[in-house]
Image: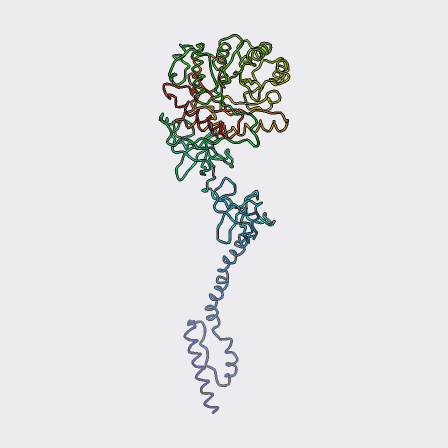
Length: 580
């Protein structure tokens, strides 16, 4: 057995030696390794581990070891994404809607469209807020998303914890039509083409404004156009809107009636019994000559159906008859000074009205007439009081005679004296007991410390062609003064059929210079619109500007262009006003 074992070991050793001989390059400088003898076998076996070809196996393992850091480093981008996502996952805050029914809007403001209405008590999730924290973006249980005003929630919440959200700039803010029937035009001006007419209460998307900021660029049912700002309610900032360049030039409107006539509004009914008996007055001019109708300052080339001279009593009598037939209760005659033709013609007017209920008064001009002083202003008022105040056809309200005064700031004044102080001094001398109603032209309610009412001569201007829509606001200033002081004050509502004073400047007159302009009559629709605005202000007197102002183009007198159409409309308006 032992001999067999030793023989096997010898064969193994011989094999190892042969392999080493093959692997190690031959070097002639080294002698050959002698074969071991059996006596050296134990020594050879002890040395075997140190002869293992470890470098060969170490080299093959090295790439595996160097790959390990590369593999563990590849997940590192995934690890860095996790903290980045965490801050954006702000949880929504649950809250309940207060009130009964609230409007969910497309944007953070009342000038945005109402998407739907949500009932009080409904639970919603608040997901964002405006920078100011006054509007909150919410999500309803049914999935509706929109904006609610912060005060509409039932419970207090940490609004500041919500992320700030910016509304979608593609969502346009809204304007609401605030007048009876208004024109959507192709550009920002009354001279542009009328695209369509809009009813009161209709919503329009606002996309911009003109440079002056008095017209809005809007979109209605997909159709772009322009709307005059005074005819709309817009709660947004007009200054913040982008300025949009209008079409290069206005397209003139055809001189035809608008397709849909404006219906007359019912006059407001005063609370309790009527303060005064309602009257309709018309502005009247009594200084035309036969040659006046071919003068350069006559408006628009139109002429009265029957030419006349204002000093002709028959012409004045004919005008009285026309006015009565149109439902007008009296004239306000433009009056210059005692003894001049306007004074003589006013006397004729009163005499031609005898036997009728037609009562007239004057619009006092002496304080702005050439050569005016406080002294001759006082003399002129005394002349009117003494000469005409007791005439049965002189206008009276509740038994008190009435005087209208124009351009009250232009009264001659002493040094350091204000216009109100000047008028207070004048009235203290001629009407200290306030036996007459004094009605001042203008919108400054502080003049009511001296005067007994306000009226507005001009309700359409070049810069504000639809100024008439402010009538209720103007009336409120008079009513507020009356409530504060307990003194009765009168409000006079103004209506006009149109305006065209482009030719007025060709001859000198006493008017304060203003930019000439045209306010199209729109086939009577503008007349009706000014009437509707006036009666909504609940006036004590309705004043038509004018019966025969041919220089400023506001006449309703029968003419070559319009026939008696405006007289017929006036009759309908007057009956409607008094019937209200």
